[in-house]
Image (cartoon, rainbow, N blue to C red; front, top):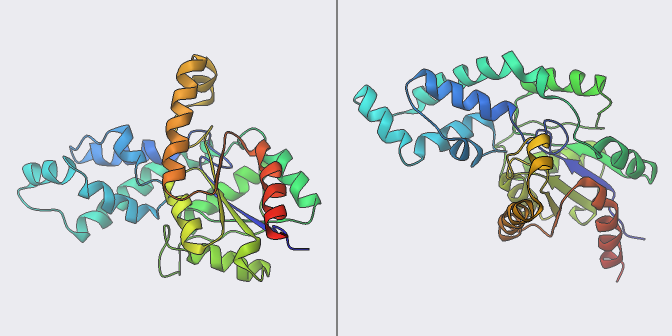
Length: 263
């Protein structure tokens, strides 16, 4: 019987750090240090990419590159990306351990799927050094995966498929048909689509929603449904096969995919 054999999880905004706030705060502080205001929406837009690529995308955004030229009388270049990445990392490392709380439902749902023989891999936009902070702190709170692949040492991070393929090699998964990528950003969706695996986006707790758990709970039902619908639309437009509100829906999605695989 053909079936999903592996789920490849994202980390921030998907498994830990409800709302994906750790990197957002660090990007805002790093750019503010050089006199450039980056909005929350701008900071979130490239989320999921390798962080140095994320910074390049921010410099390209309307108003950011222009402001740099106004302040420094020259266009930004790769050396500025490297400098900004160091600033970003400084702010991120100072707070990263505080953003490692598992998102509700993740631990119990994955435990149930593991019991069915499904392997749990993971990819991330964080570097290995960043994950060296995240891993032990998340593990202390009960969240672990069987494999982690970062962009380090690969031809590229998201939206390229290399981290997914490395997970498949590490975990011994023979076909992309048996892999499900689960994540909270458009870059996650594109990573899954480019790898030609089953791709599922999650709405609540995601970078795309950009809300804390308390803000989500306090929102009026009609407003929340509108926000969720907009995130769902963006993920489906990016190529997601399915979009769920929470990870608790994932077992049903997997059963549906397994039926498709065996038609």
